[in-house]
Image (cartoon, rainbow, N blue to C red; front, side, top):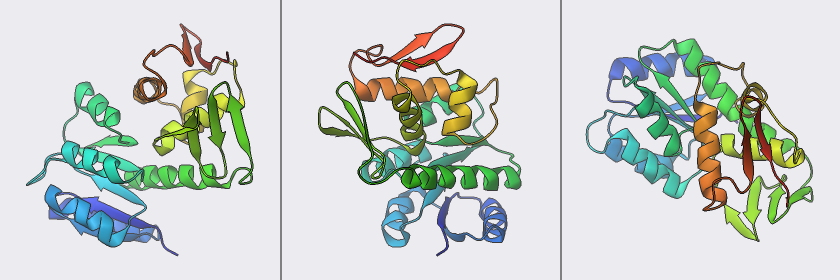
Length: 228
């Protein structure tokens, strides 16, 4: 069965370009040209991933992203002409899995789509349904790709799940930014990329009001999950 991709962008030229390259990779592609139509398209087409522009008619992409996260944990890759670090960090903080700036190389976008979908497959294929990793009051059900804290589910994006999977399988072990990036994103580490910082910050917020309770930063070394 073909994986389904929803492309939300008001520029027909960009939608056509992405469709061409994504269909060449074997994906089924659906398009919308307005932010107001994204939620309906998610319910109608049930895509496996969404490519989302920020500046669209109607509801802007960042508000759309919040709507998506209220309903689904599917990977969302923002494609935007906004290149400032603040915009990238905001998008990632709101739940985007990746951020690509315009103008872009369509081959790179296709590769990022493949990597994001591979993270879902990898997360769901490791271990049996009974394989549960427990660290303190955290439990990770590998078969169901579900993290719970004191029995209550913690909603994670695919990247956040992969980071927790790595840390919980190796409690108290220090991982460098490169190791975390290559495991969670499934691609070569980009030295100047601040995706890790944003993802760790979001994870800390989701895990506890005290940001340093679970994931510790070791300056110049990396991060580790502390057991208690």
